[in-house]
Length: 224
Image 1 (cartoon, helix red, strand yellow):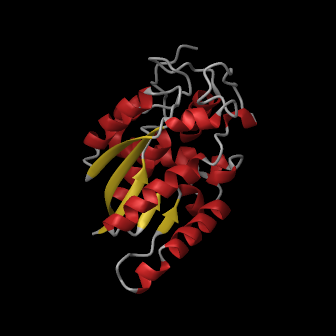
Image 2 (cartoon, helix red, strand yellow; image 1 turned 45 degrees about the horizontal axis):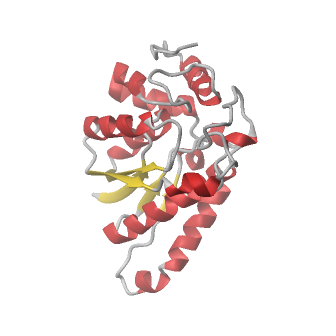
Image 3 (cartoon, helix red, strand yellow; image 1 turned 135 degrees about the vertical axis):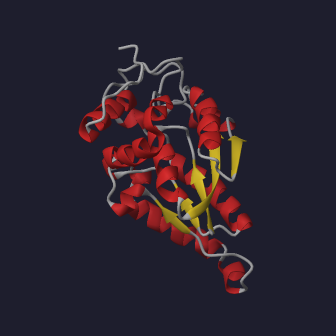
């Protein structure tokens, strides 16, 4: 079976993306601690890596990024208020590029042929979630290892997202719910540093909408 590296946050999108790929790939998950407020997601990612019996799961500490990000975004800056709907303050500067660089280095080392992250059709407001970005960074990474690829020392990688296959958040949710049932409600979406979903941040609101569109009764516990 071919190998794939998946960026795995423990959120709805990454967990459902893993389920979508699992029948075709031997999955290796990588989770990043980058100084995010929602550090709860690390624990959740560990839980789902075990549930899904992923081949390997690495937690990579890049918390130094919090200092480098300064006051650019609400996800790493403790003094900035998290909005309830999309605002560019939610966008962490090229976060997916940082994650993908590390994940792809692991992929080349593992001879994995796919690097996946859970960007979907509803993520079009995020520049580093769009298929145009995914294709460009795939090309750059393969160019960076082109000599090794030509010598058959490395395998060419494909950077893939559900967005590239036209899948929405609710599409992913249906895939995940079919496999996990009520366990799906333990995934973590909230941007805040809380023990239960706040229910009012942009990510919680997107989660609620996805359940509505998928016609699945949402049993997630929300504060609001």
